[in-house]
Length: 148
Image (cartoon, rainbow, N blue to C red):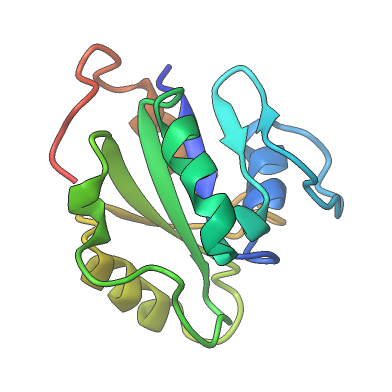
């Protein structure tokens, strides 16, 4: 299975998604540092929110096969600038979390503007959409660099 790095602002659902993808009980837990598991790397939101910490995300992306940009459906803005995925030499996917809230299509538009060609929609609490991400990670393990 491909290893996935989750990147997004604080509170967008990275750790909850990690728990759902690993089949664990979903409960709130603040990620304090990079959290590694078998096929997931969960990054603290502060790494994406703070320019001085952003370089760590670039370094940790080399530990992953796929980088996921996460935006919650109820987020008011996107941290990710337009066309940012071209700067990453890994496959980059988008994940819209909290799809039961607000406007998932707005979050999808932001992810596509950032350059994500493949976007997944999940509700980590119910598990909706998590199987699609797992299936994607199981495909083409040997093809590290694919179309974003």
